[in-house]
Amino acid sequence: MIANLEFDFTVNKAEKKVFITREFAAPLLLVWDAFTKKELLDQWTAPAPWMAKTKYMNFEVGGKRFYAMVGPEGQELWSIQKYTSITPRTNFKMWNAFADKDENPELPGSEWDYNFSEQNGITKVSITIFNESFERMERLLKGFRQGFTATLKNLENLLATLSQK
Amino acid sequence: MRRDIFQAIADPTRRAIIALIALQAMTPNAIAENFNTTRQAVSKHLRILTECELVKQEYQGREIYYSLEINKMKEIDKWLEQYRKIWENRFNQLDKVLSTLKKQKK
Image (cartoon, rainbow over all chains, first blue to last red; front, side, top):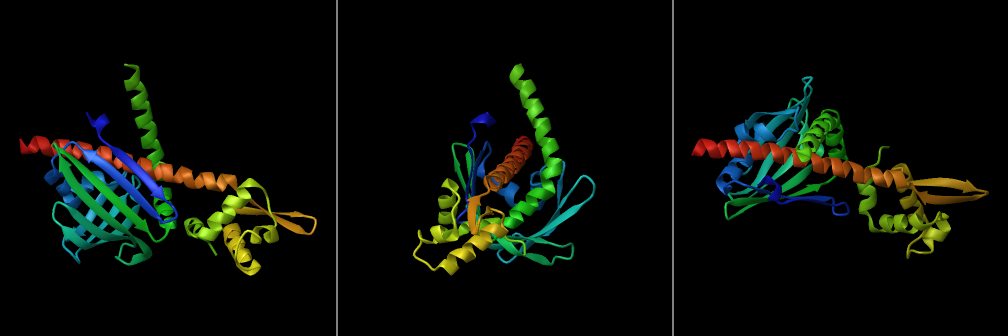
């Protein structure tokens, strides 16, 4: 079932934009909640074994989410998100930047545009990320690389086992 | 000064320079002949590309030849691929969250 769900990831390096599209086998309302409620966001946004921890979140225009990705050894990568536009269950836009633990943002940040639509019980989410600097993406990646490589390895092994059956 | 590699390739002239020297190593003069701009402007672009380690310089006699650092270009693709995998992994986690939520609603 999940294998049929669309996943598309493209990068336009010249425009410094990343485009991500993914379908989910769930109604739009649930998917919208999963992207806009802190207790749900914390359950999936960190790549395992990292955990997401939201300190506070006001999902309203001008509101903010202040959260950390917490590593297996307790290391914390803080970020701030500022909501710039919200059309319930259709679209929201935000500005995202790395920060220190005292909420001082580290510039430049990135701009995110989320679009939601549902068809036949499948919800499609399209995300456009504009990075003023790709270097910050590079940094994000470095932070996760270690734990993440291990996770991928596990996944690969699991897939190999499954495909032999 | 640490340069942003993606900022380097965001400029159309620098992308054109990369395309040119991907084929063969060239001197700054030979590169400049391909552009409707000053030799100084081309030198500035080359300096930025060199600082990003996207191009390398080689001296042949008194001439400097610029050529492409293929491995550095590959590196860009490699980390983008890893970034893609982070998203893939993240969405798989979300699938699980959504399926739990669906069960709770029933």
